[in-house]
Image (tube, rainbow, N blue to C red; front, side):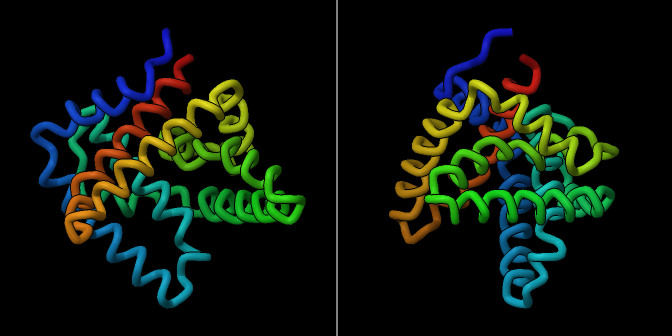
Length: 188
């Protein structure tokens, strides 16, 4: 299977959102509010991984037109131990890399960027295996993800211009495009 360009990923994500904008924007708002509340009371360190897996499940369901539901956000708790361990392992590895002159931390962040997507797709996987698989599928795709991130950053800046209201469109779009990115490289 040929890997699609980032432009194609964003274009395909836009098409997949057709007819699913309402549920996707609603999900984005619920997830953002829940993440903000969890961040205020330091719950992020406990449930951040599970929420990230739940968001990955939702956006994969949007990408695959597989009946996305707001409740998908909480399906990450079905893999709570794995997501909890993955959250902490990634945090320790990336933080350790940042202490080693920043560049290793950035490199490792790219290596493990697909970890939550892998857990979402394989709920029975172990944390170490999810990190290893992420590193494996990101091999040869880190530069592509960097360019993808630059494109996403550009859209986020544009989404902020109309008093941040554009983020209601931009953030779900980027998330579905990221699901497309994961699907592309995981099937290679």
